[in-house]
Image (cartoon, rainbow, N blue to C red; front, side, top):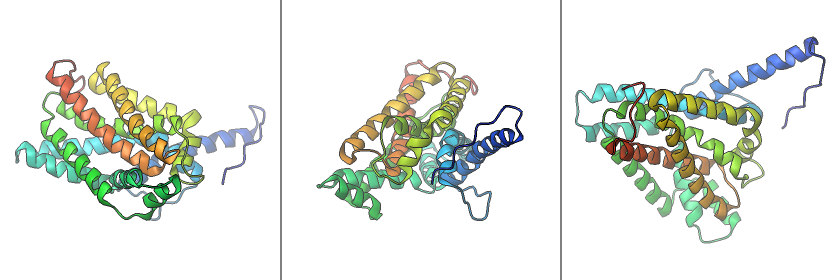
Amino acid sequence: MRPASPTRMPPSSPRRSGTVLNRIRRHLTGAVVALEFLTPLRFRRVPRYDDHTFAESLGWYPLAGLLIGIVLLLVDEGLGRLLPRAPVAAIEVALLALLSGGLHLDGVADTADGMAYQGDRAGRLGVMSEGNTGPAGVMALVIVLLATWAALASLESPVRAGGLVLAPALARWTVVPVALLFRPARPRGLGRLMHEAAWPVAAPLATAIALVAAVVLFAGAGVLLIVVGGIAAVLIAGAAARMLDGVTGDVFGASIEVSQVVIWYALIAAAARGAIEPFLFG
């Protein structure tokens, strides 16, 4: 249900002040919602929030990604002293799945199953909502997990630390261009919520967080990683949208996983050619 629009009042009106405070409080609550939705963190015994607040939490998705990246870096620093790179990468793949609750990987599987279904749009959406992973979904999961492992095993210093932190943040930012560029495939659901709430606050906020993180970690070259991640996500979402006549929450999840891997590969390729250097961890 869409909340009622606030009544316009003069600047000195207490009611207007209360409305502004309520808006600020709602946007700050969005940070909590984003962390509870995208990570295992729970700040309330039973997380509850209205649809509008949930959708506006999109603005804080990169912040949740940064937290995931920091945890990934800490684990990498600890295990890197004990184990070779390959088993460390395998553990980190499992850690990423645990930190996101398998949410985005589920989106990969469901999106692949829906796109592989030989039928009409309604049938594709029906397959995606069933929750049963088919052959296409299993294959997509294997490919994404192997690609993630290879990226984590190949990412070298001096860009490794910054890459581990930044890629999860930028990958979660990619929900912004997908939500803005593609209409929702269903009249109800995550796709519709994100599409309606992306502007005017959530999209600029998420982009600002992503830009600051990218520049702090890799200076100006970090902006190119944002572009690379955004292009990867839009290509995946575009392919799905053509078959589904829009995007769903599963498509968002698939875009996050694919763009995360692509960002790491872009970073590996750029570092190998000396085209990018770390700024914060240099």
